[in-house]
Length: 350
Image 1: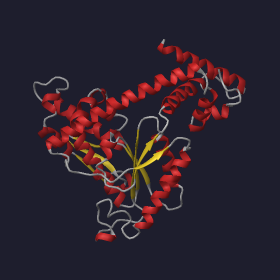
Image 2: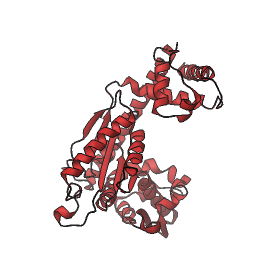
Image 3: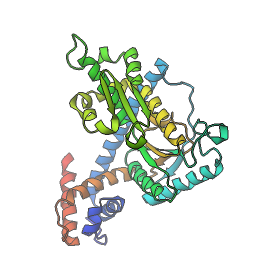
Image 4: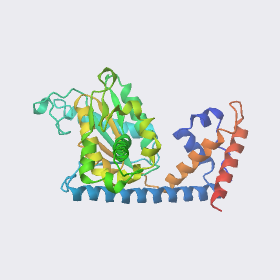
């Protein structure tokens, strides 16, 4: 059963954005097969989130036991935004309003004091306009879409500020590359030996082989891997060396014992960029971004949890249906393609 009043043409389908998914959700809002698919998708997402959160907690607790992370550290308070009924643009409006409030409140320091750095307000030389914006939330709340929207808007606001996004993923990959390389250089070790490679002493050495600074082309910021015979820039090897089989298959093992080290490395990197006048957008789990000092911390929530599953179901349906139709397809044909894909996916769990 579909709501025939919801017309989806090829232009809307091809966009594959929040407007498309909202239209798909509206079209199938009362369809029992869609609701069943959505419930299954939502349960799977929440299950993965809970599993990931537990793994992260263990990693952070391990880091605290090792003394890598301060057990008494308290992050700044998060600003909660319920995204229910809000477009990504509306969510960005709320975040940008808060950013402007902080900028006006700290004109002299330009956020550097709140970031723990040394700006004009406390004797250093932070450039005007620098800030770090942290964004958290469960899967399905629109973090990725919001970050993309924010980046686009901040880059075109006329301020001339450089806007960058940061992810811890390449840092975990860099540590894994060093650990794998270490194993290759040891006599008597074949393949990846986690017990021997991931000792506290070795991890400290691997982290010391990573540095963040203006190493990239034209003096751009980059992470440098320098040690064990390697001298690489992450931006140049992120799609090659850092995605090689010896890295990809061992990341989960390395991540379990390096949460603290990577968290602190990332905190230092984004702080450095923020103090230089850049705007840094940092997306992640609370456990991993708590240690980044900034008053601009947002957590996206959804007061109707069922929408998480509906969004994921809609995203899957529209991504499959767009392959089934041509640019000249009528709205009727597109509707049939969407319904066919929806029914096909609804039967997956049967």
